[in-house]
Amino acid sequence: MGHPAGNGTSPETLVSRREMLGAAAATLGLLAGGGLSSAAGGEEEDSLDSLRGPAGVLWDRVHKQFRLRGGLAYLNNGSLGPCPVQVVQAAIQAWRSLEENPADMAYGPLLEKMEAARTRAAGFLGCATEELAVTGNTTEGMNAVAQGIRLEAGDRILTTDQEHPGGLAGWGYRQKHEGVPVDLAALPTPPASPEAIVESIQRGLTKATRVISVSHVTYTTGLRMPIEAIASLARANGALLVVDGAQAPGVLDVDVTRLGCDAYATSAHKWMLAPKGTGLLYVRKESQERIAPLLLQHGYRSYTASTGTRNVPALIGLGAAVEFLQRLGKIDIERRALTLRTHLYEVLQTLPGIQVVSPPPGDLASSLLTFTLPNGKQPAAVAKTLAEEYGVIVRVMSHGNVQGIRVSTHIYNSEADLDRLVSSLRKGLGK
Ligand SMILES: Cc1ncc(COP(=O)(O)O)c(C=O)c1O
Image (cartoon, rainbow, N blue to C red; front, side, top):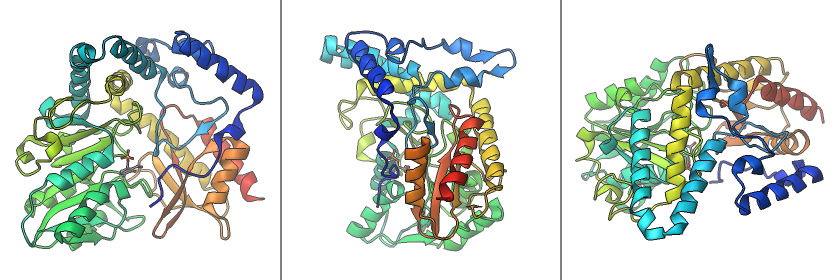
């Protein structure tokens, strides 16, 4: 399996000599103890309070909190999201404090800050602090759950044909080493309705199915799965529902308790805009007896005998990222990101030969959108041209019969980024 990120582009090709000199000076400023704001070209970060006006979130001001390279239309948040400057500052500050007296700081005041970040994240996801563990990413969370579910001989796992390898690895391991059968439900692409998805899961169920494992939002086409309905189905069949939530919290208004799943793993470094290598794992209180990974044997705290020492600055940055998102508001963020996505959906209809394979705007849509190219055009080559010649960063999607380009829209993007994608595609495809 290839890692999601790549389109083989060297980002350096986008940087002018002047920008490179600026970046070098900025780095020196940072190393010399200068604040990140001076390192980022003289722009101060705004206070969180100032990101909202009387009429709602000031999205233009939100854009300015991100330090993407000048001229880049970054449309690949589904692989990794950028941190706003407030998050980078919080992490750097924590790192500086940590290095002043490592052990005392890591297991003293900074451990308390990591715990505060976990509590804040639990509030953000709609669960109790004691139901939420910090991890490094979704893959780690999904693997821990797969490892920690007690199964008996004959028990089966049901998942879908649209899962990311990171959500599947743990089940594959149990299949390989314990012979646990893993069944695949074929999801319609695109599905006609949420009911059509639930039916496809239902068709895959057997009396022996003990676990249903699905993505909240598929990485392939951004299909937003009807998790609440699948949770009811799982419960009625005595199965646990495990959700790979890599592509949802931070952009969609996710409440894990409301979803009704038993476990939910996510990566904070995607849509939650947190430092790279941070993630969260929710295990419902009532399900903790049945899902008992070694990682959680000594409880859910940020440091336990099962987890050992963590990346302290990154976890404190995670707390700052959640605060940033909370100040903007989950509902407003979702609305903004989906407005951008609808704009993209509409402008893509004007391009001959392009076919959107993601659901139309509505219940099944998310902030990921995938389209296929006209005959004879290779997604990897087109993505490379977009990046190198137009500064537009997208992800190549290659999964079964989904072969195309995936675009992510988050709050730091604008309609102008999407229009640039479309005009670049129009020019690029003509080559
Ligand atoms: C649905 C899904 N699951 C898991 C992952 C793996 O994420 P991570 O590398 O953060 O563990 C991804 C990454 O794109 C994903 O889209």
